[in-house]
Image (cartoon, rainbow, N blue to C red; front, side, top):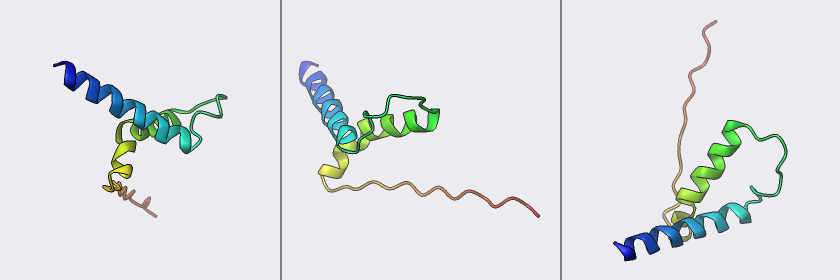
Length: 66
């Protein structure tokens, strides 16, 4: 159990470093939910980029009807 907790903490610290490298913590003004979500996803998935996984999300938004 302790090794799992250590792995999770190290993973989140590396994710925070990845988010800091992208400059997500510099602007502390008005933050939208979308910006907060981007930071959270980067902290959780950031180390995957360093492992070479390079996750990408494709979001197809339907066009409005005419």
